[in-house]
Length: 489
Image 1: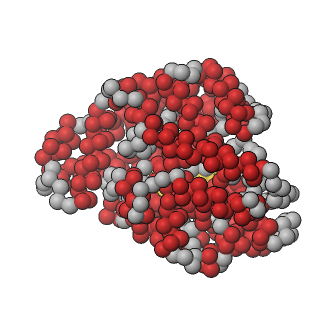
Image 2 (image 1 turned 45 degrees about the vertical axis):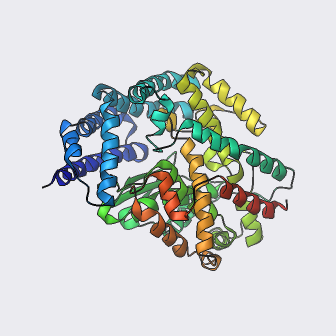
Image 3 (image 1 turned 120 degrees about the vertical axis):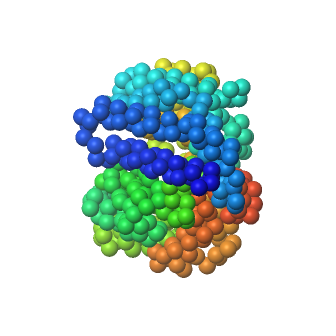
């Protein structure tokens, strides 16, 4: 075997162990008995220790020095293994294990604090997580920005400064559009209750309509919907709320977007570094284009309206046009995952600014709730009513995912670029959408982006799919056009 072949055989085992570690996390959020938390934390720590040891094995460095790539796939595999090897080698094994154990414990502390509306119960654990992430970031960053070192975990090549510049360009038009919309009469909202069985039945239809394979996946319930796994085992979760079936439907489609990316990667990349999405920003582009530009389009909501009528009977919305406006209604709300397209990114920018301040030491954990509430009041015009609608609503910081939040808005920007290219390539999609058929659109995404997995760097992935450098312009133009028509602006 060549050095490259030996390295890839070793890496295949590492990737398989990483999948097992991910399955432990999936189980913890879906089916694990509550009393198992302390043992699960030890299991996470043990897996983190094993994976860390494999990723910094000196033999990996020797293989990397000797390996000679013969094609673009080999070069990309070596790029990803080298990046992981160099970054992981800077993190002590003790720290990697402690992070895994602490974040596993912190997840349960957060969940209980959220249920109890008790921020004070969570803050000491958050401080531990933050301190460990700061230690990790300092070890990796050297003379560079520690926040950028963590951002690199989720969006290789991006920096906090570059994202801040993009977000500063987004904010004015978003705020202007939001203000114009709020001066107009709002479309009707849903009223009444919708039974869980009916919601989950439509949820499964939606998953299948967007190409999710239940042969290689499953749908479960979780407090915070997520997608997990890659290759031949890609699982999603959703949630239900009796008075808000859209929460269930669009959570499902969102997670299907993530899962479809993983299921759409070419099988030749299975259990290699290229066998998963290249970044969380690109990943989010898939979930957001599925959820918003496709599933909230006028044509597709017409099909969904028929499904709801068949399942729930007369639910108070007169026709397909009124339903389209209801689905896309701009509304007050505290929860990021339930926010409309116009206001969603304002939720993300709040979190991005706060976590950068936490990492820089400009904001202390003890002051986080007040800072969140002040920023929310300034951005949205009304006060947070309880912690579960504020600083405790998201799971990310309990899991140590500092640097993750900005990829949500970056994903929206990428989705805007992809949708613009998709509509130019396939201008007659709406006739299919009206029948609940998304195969042409999802097939285009699979062919132009998903199948390649991690072959190209994130920005290169978007350029390859669209033929243009990513920018915020297409997203803003899409939002102005769509909501201008709905609200008569």
